[in-house]
Figure (cartoon, rainbow, N blue to C red):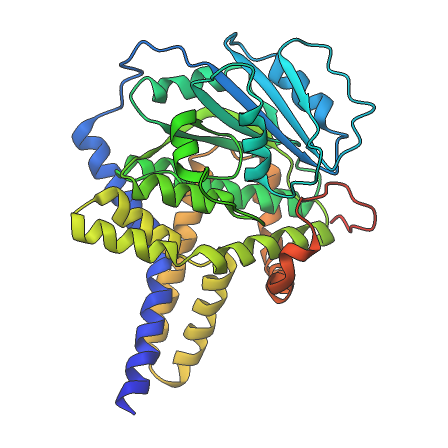
Length: 393
């Protein structure tokens, strides 16, 4: 009986700390920022030579816009590599010496395989590379904003993925989620002395570090960024967060698209969350703040999971201990305040605030995604945008 009681309170503690962890992280960030001041703009006088790798799988309709956006970058020392995996490229004509269109002879079906296919076909040995999705657009100053952190000696930098579209309630809620993660898992986590989490695109690395972390692995399915960030942080590098290195990312607009995408993401969390234990304990034993904080973040379940569990624990404790139930309510209020802080400190469109009333619907579809998560990687290897049959709200 004592063992069951211990397990009950232990599980509640594991879930409950996720509600207050962002605010604690924010406190560390504020204290550390006050102690060390603002970071310098740059130290080393370097001009990186970038390989910009754009990966596409089956879909090519947005590639011309992506390449046009990249061609307008306010930077000269780069080359664009478009890897069109399992794509019909007969209508793709970019007409620029800065663009190399690559069509693999066999289907790769993997982000990292596409990346290394591009690396093997580099026209010159680029010092740095950056990953861009086939539906992204880039701010003209994207590479210059990354350079600020490479000049400080960082070898990995994550930019910001802002919403390209806010054409539905779900797109707005998806954007709200991104703002939360950009703030806490990017700006605050990095500012607290750890590393920004990687987001799959809008990220850049020295070519040497990228190859060192992934070239010996064959990562399939979603989640290569999880493996990559573990490889970087476990090697004691920090991933910088560049809030002015902006890529515009297409948000999920329809319910089918939302469920399939989230099913892959949830599958990815279950597949790779244990990497958090490895990094956390390595940080504890070596007194490494970067690894310790980063490991805790990797162990955190997806938002909807720990929020639902928190509400269930609060209700269950109404029949066990009213004081514990009140403690859960206070913790939920702290989390809610922290969520609004992230929106208030970001460039948040009014439509995003208006969409928040539909969070219960958003959570319902993520529960549907949870049920599909076991077979998520069999659904598709790429997110489809504007696919027929999707319901927009």
